[in-house]
Image (cartoon, rainbow, N blue to C red):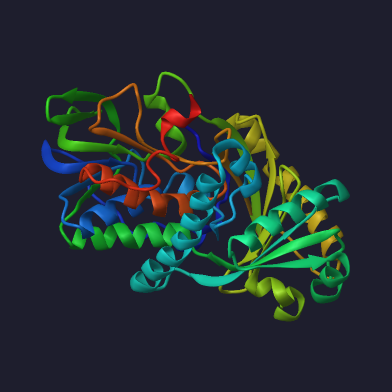
Length: 403
């Protein structure tokens, strides 16, 4: 599957950080994780740190799929408003989803500090109403978050203009958010895991999955076998290949990044994420060396050849939107790219067993705008299922909720 177009910045910046061998012999383990991007790395790390014998396999070089194209905004704010989740699943479930996501940001921060040198930093998240009709929706969302103790502040049109120089009806300012280099974090996690005894194999394509009593077997293109007590399918947007029926809709999403920008121009953006209520939305964040990353312009046609042709055009559209929103900012693209993006109907991820398989085959579909945050949550959830323990998010993130 062709997952990306153009020149994703993390791959350009970091190059091939670490290489692992191809699988050339049969192996046995406790858990095999299929997928060596940020989702697979977080899950495999969680399992390795808690004593499981883990094997990770990926058909590409590690982190070379969607992780290299991720824009890595770390937010507890889900693309679906809490008020909408509450209508669909009840107040308790909405609160659980948002509180868990808030906790996950802190957990990612601790892990990033432990690993070191992954361009992690905490920041604010400024979520503004794109138009007047969205003002009331944001006001209700703010009231819900404030009532439940989330770290938010309401900014009126006047306050938004005075403090941020933005012209918009209103905004919610959240004090808890972060950013990271996902390619670097995943690569370094996998390298650390290998040093602790986990086995990682790249350029190893899985062609068959077979369930047996007490075990799962993966067969590779070269005929090798991985036999495990559990298998976790964490191969991103390609994971749906293993399901008879799609559970999420694939889109194309676009982004560009600038050369380092003068701090006097970046101003508050140096320590803030910016995004809007319109769907699809434009968003911005910075890197540790002062580059501005801009993303959005999603469309519903995930056709690789078309996506390849659209990269420069979409980057130009994003640049024009930045100029209208922040006229003082010179934000010319240095690198532009696009990638496959998937979202579920409710904005929540899917972790755990699928009815098509037995209990030893687990899925990790961290789909939506909070993919890394969801992956952090999914790591703990899947470990609990493998260890036959209960977990508060099992039902909310299960395939069965979609009917």
